[in-house]
Every structure is written in structure tokens, then in C-alpha cells.
View 1 (cartoon, rainbow, N blue to C red):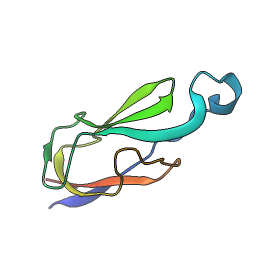
View 2: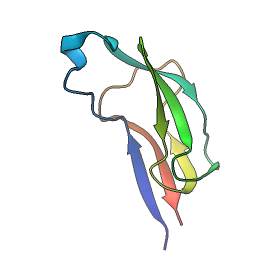
View 3: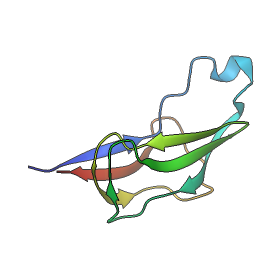
Amino acid sequence: MSRIVEVRMPKYPECWETCGNCGSGEVVIETLLVRPGDTLACDDTLLVLETGKVALDIPSPQAGRVVEVFVAEGERVPEGALLLTIETD
């Protein structure tokens, strides 16, 4: 039986605001690598986030098919934001 998995913006590290190494604190979708209908393996890169100083790959938590994407390239995303949904096998 298939189920829908939500992929959300990861929680920011505790040091986010204190060390300054991650940039201004704004997180932007730099590159969106999937679209609805794409088939994924676990750990495939879904998108790349840009913090101003660091680029972070966001991997797929499970294998499946992309159902819907809720963000676009260049968009700022807050902690916990829904990025996309995956239908698992």
C-alpha cells in the first residue's frame, strides 16, 4: 500500500544565528532537481539550498514518486516549510 511522505525544510542548526558561518540566515532554493512524476531512489538529491555561504543538498528520505512540489527556484523558505510530497511504494 502506498503512502504520501512530506519533505519539509530541515530545522536550522542551533548555532545558526551565533556563529555567522551560514550567512545571513536566509535560505533560498538554489536549484530544484525534481518535478511531479519523477521517480526517486532513497538519498537522491531533491534540491539545493543556498544560505549565502553554504550550499546544502536535500536528499530524498525514501524511494518513490514525486507527487507535488510546493517551492520554486529563487524562493526563500522558512524552517519547517513543506517542500514537496513523495508517494512511496
